[in-house]
Picture 1 (cartoon, helix red, strand yellow):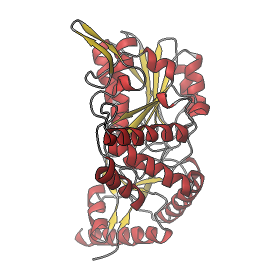
Picture 2: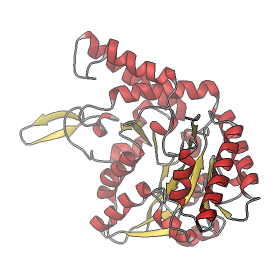
Picture 3: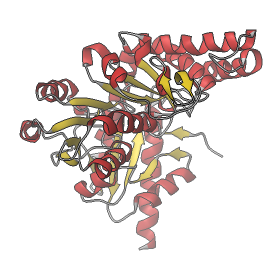
Picture 4: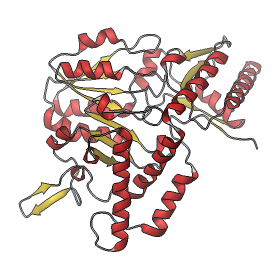
Amino acid sequence: GCPLVYFDNAATTQRPRQVIEAITETYEMHYGNVHRGIHRLADETTELYENARQRIAQFLNAKSHEEIVFTSGATAGINLVARAWGDAYVQEGDEILVSELEHHSNLVPWFQLAERTGAVIRYIPITDEGLLAREQLERLLSPRTKLVAITAVSNVLGTIVPLTEIIAAAHATGALVLVDAAQSVPHRKTDGQSLNADFLVFSGHKMLGPSGVGVLYGKREILESMPPFMGGGSMIREVRMDGFIPGDLPYRFEAGTPPIVPAIGMKAAIDYLERVGLERIDQYERELVKRLHQELETLDFVRILGPKPEEKSGIVSFVVERIHAHDIAQLLDHVGVAVRAGHHCAMPLHKRLGVTASVRASFYFYNLPEEIERLLEGLDRAVRLFRRRK
């Protein structure tokens, strides 16, 4: 009975008509399986699918479209690296460096790799303000460090991580770097060659695209050195009675039928985002963050988590004194404001912050300044309701 305010964009985004139409048109007019058929539908779908790969390579400024591997999402991309690269090159005693900011998707695959290999997981700590403790990085990096797996932007605090500094330091010790860019690629311009990470992953559904598709972008020479993780059709060059020869990049990592239509929809989403402009999106979201910060700072019963607005992306998480985050989110939902509540798949981070759960408002360019007022009105109503009950 009231207009929707959607502030859960860090979890997933809404789709513009152009993306939905691209998906519908493919299913209605062009759909066939890719790379295998010699009929017209297969040819048309293959062209659309590979055009999407080319478009994403251009979007990231990759050296080659062969460095773009389609996955089912950022989580699948991280797991692919942990299995294909990790199982081949990580040994007992090697160290994998992560940060206290990480999403579970950039923790659990490395825990599993450590269990398989005897590797050691080490953490880059954060400050009480939610910033990476940069001075600890040099102490933690060593010749034993095999990989640094780091988020670009915290999905809880919005903290923008100094990737250039981290990547340079890691490479100086011989370590590779994987960047979880799920919260950065949809909001800020990403230049893969300039960034110089060895692996970078992100998901389509967080950037106006369909769910079920993501990208692993990796340096060609490293991808070529990795054995394929999943076996099956499409990822082979030759199969004999006594074995197989894997296919070329990127197909050796795309076993089976890939996310064909989601990849095509993802291209439409990128076209849309670039028409809007990533620089404009980043600047606009920062203005929304600053506005919400200013309002919440006037409330003595609210604790804002994370750094000041100038050091974060479009995410504001907070806790309300003596009211659980789930209760706040449920009452906000009753007035049409959708936020996230819980640990946001970052339990170690919440433990570090001394809280069990938080409320998260996360923005995208289609949010409006006046929607923040709706959030604040709903928050005030929730607090007054709980105070009356007590």
